[in-house]
Amino acid sequence: MERTQISIVVPVYNESGALANLISEIGAVCDARNYEFEIIVVDDGSTDGSAEVAAGLPGVTVVCFRRNFGQTAAFDSGFHMARFPYVVTMDGDGQNDPNDIPRMIAYLEENDLDVVAGWRQSRKDTFGKRIISRGANLLRKLLLRDNIHDSGCSLKIFRRECFENLRLYGEMHRFIPALLQMQGFSVGEIAVNHRPRTSGRSKYNVFRTFKGLADMMLLWFWRSYSVRPIHLLGSVGVFLLVISGLFGLRTVYLFLHEQKLSSTLEPLLTVFTFIAGLLFVSLGILTDLLIKIYYARENVPYYSIRKVIRPDSVGEKPVRISTSNARQADSDRPLVS
Image (cartoon, rainbow, N blue to C red):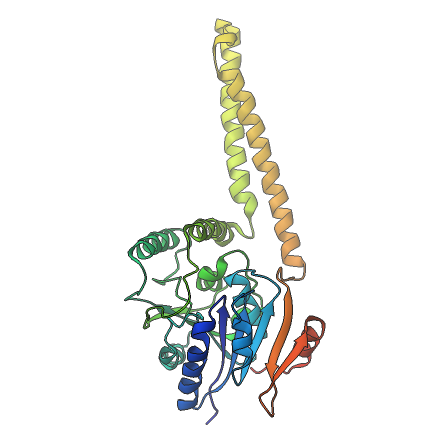
């Protein structure tokens, strides 16, 4: 019987106090189940020595960003660094429980899914954070119509082919299941344990909520009009042009029959709606062209990796790989399917 092969991606930002215990827990769970596994810690510009702590742990690959690019970039980097057929993601603060990993793998295989997302039914977060999260989840369901309850839970499992044509930007790590559903991947959900934070500080703030909402609106546009933006923007433009025409007819009528244009809004509204309609139609055409260019061009990541530290295959000693030869090492490494 073949061993289950999994890559565990852990983005960290100033989580040195929780890393050692978390990596130890992950190793114990994987060893108990006889998994073949790799642990990829992506250090998102930490200033507390998180990268050094991770590099000193056996069997850990450490990806070090030059600065703080955000959790989305960290996940994206880890996804494209992963070698094994299953990719597990989890936070580096220790609140996700590694003991849930075997249940998630079993659920994915039993239901023949591509993605299984964790659902923190009993969250150990502040009341305010839970309320904001529920409001955001409700809006997400209305706009994106995905079938999960908790998009903010980092504990998820994916089949590696999910990331072959996926690039993440902004704060879109919360919406990975929705993005994959748009591409036709099957997504499931399972309740997971959520533990209280024991070290470090939460990186959550209200500004992240606003950025997440902005990304949600972008995804709504992308979900509905990614290959036909002219249908949205052009329709608005045509509607405004029709309104402009109606106001124009009203203006002509007033001029011919009542001759009191100086005291009415019709001429101003005619010009305003006409210009706005032309702008929307033009924007729709330009957006349509840009999206076609987007689909035609090669994906280029917007983050910069300073170094990659891999464990030596024999002595488990950290091996540093520079940015230039990290890409070559990845291209030479065989892919497991």
